[in-house]
Amino acid sequence: MIIAKAMKLTGLKDKLFAQSAEATLHAFEDAAAVASWAKNGVADTVQAGIASGRNADTLAPQGYMTRAEVATMIQRLLKQSGLIHIFPFSSSYQVLVKLAPLIAKALNLRTDAYFEI
Image (cartoon, rainbow, N blue to C red; front, side, top):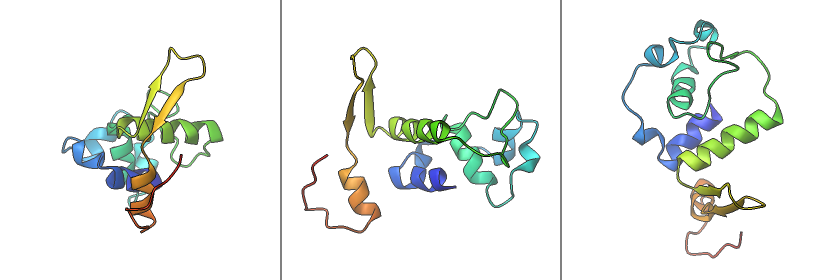
């Protein structure tokens, strides 16, 4: 749900096609195990390509996530939202981040302040 809320903040949710949660999650055998209050958020993350499940037909909504899985989802969120650009041919993956205004908005900070990243 945190990722789904972040999708609203970054504007990514507005770019998704209108589709029911059931239609988005129908390919996953355990879609019924997603809590009703989380179904729309999970469907949004799947539709945006941020979450893809444990495999092609399993979401594992009651399972634990590793730090690597969380980091991957955050990277996908930022990439799909156009907030980072990753250049895979760089030796150390140059990452350009445009998060300062977004963070300022999320934390209700002054937007005329300068941030160093």
